[in-house]
Image 1 (cartoon, one colour):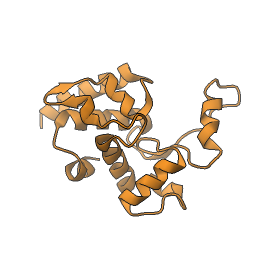
Image 2 (cartoon, helix red, strand yellow):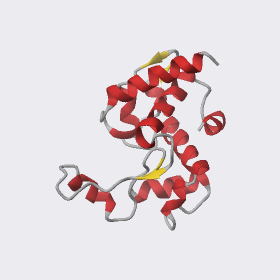
Image 3 (tube, helix red, strand yellow):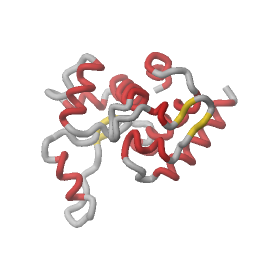
Image 4 (spheres, helix red, strand yellow):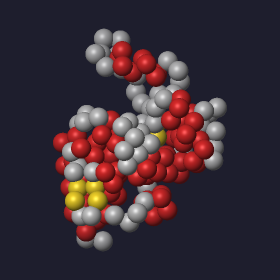
Length: 153
């Protein structure tokens, strides 16, 4: 993730902290497939909107929707539409995570700089770059922890 940030990021440590916090929350720093909600889960109906297409969450950021797989295919230079599991490759997963958040390619289509810039970090609303405000406070706490560690470097 750090290598991808060096290449596709802008050097802002707060953005890196938030990207790492997102990876911690979404996948525990391990590119993985989204788990299937149980039949009786209230979140199952929302998940079915994309799950049944085969373009369910994969990677560090849980990439979803065929259109996003298609867009990220162009970026990483690999056909993720034909083989969605390639989004599990750590190199591609890191590039997708960093580029997608920096450029605003997920959720509300706003770049991370909309929430984090010039030494100001709105870690709560930065969650909107990926998934509304789901678990925003928790991920903000992770970002604060990570930011403190990055300052030591």
